Length: 387
Image 1 (tube, one colour):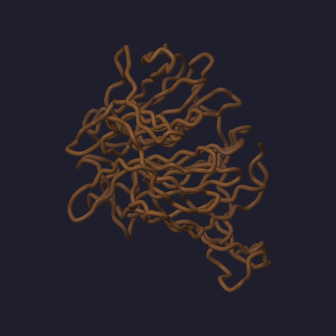
Image 2 (cartoon, helix red, strand yellow):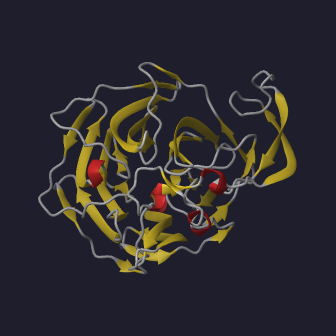
Image 3 (tube, rainbow, N blue to C red):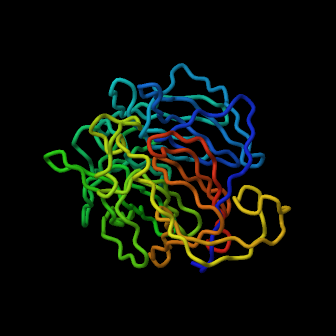
């Protein structure tokens, strides 16, 4: 990975039929030039509101629109579900909805037709859950981890065959990782493996613990192992956002584990009273950005937070800093890196999503101190990523 700074910007965004409600615990997926958002939750006037709306962001024009989605049935409102893409279809599994309802249904959203379809199965599905992960591998859907919204967390692995319309439970080998939910689990296609980082779990007495390990599942042999990582290790966290862009995993945000959990005072993010994500203290959990005295001269871009009077393209001097929630994992060397950030870094958040577009990553939504967010931020990875 090249040694360079990265740049966060806040682009100007327009809309056709209003803006999506602020939310966290949603999913976002990229198909062509669209970022498609589904579901999530927010807390307002003493109650949790669960969503099952679909929004699309045209990333060429940075313009929101709300597609009309047909189908005899559609998914119930939910958050904490998982999603993945095959061709022009988004697959959505599980999540938690109103009145504590926990799902284990599998849906397909066809964005060419803008239709929903509830997929059937000829075998028993995974147990209902939230905070799990799902990735698409060779035309199959791989689901792992999750939480029953009470005490039980999972480390099982399930595979759904789209051709056979059935769930399979493959034999798993190696060092089985600790049960967890709210981890990032991403597909490294070049090495045919899943990379897992972080998450949270409960012990038999209901006491939470937060994880910071990096694991990998070798998909050819379905073998787990502890990754031999090096570098600037991220701290324990869960419900962080993550994505793969080229040879780099980008991780941002997350609930920070024991030091944050000691400060929890209110319930604002859509979980039950025992949910790790349900309790925050606004002034206490926002991490301090580690500032440096260094500066860098770069081309000014709108939305970067500095040089508002400068015309686009002009050279301006901006500070660079690190952020305690922004980390990269080099998939070639398995080295964790805390990058230098040019300009204004994003606010603390968790329950956000990251989506790759070319050499950029779009971050959308999440919760900040229990307050739902609706902002779009763009991370420019040019000079960092090798394809």
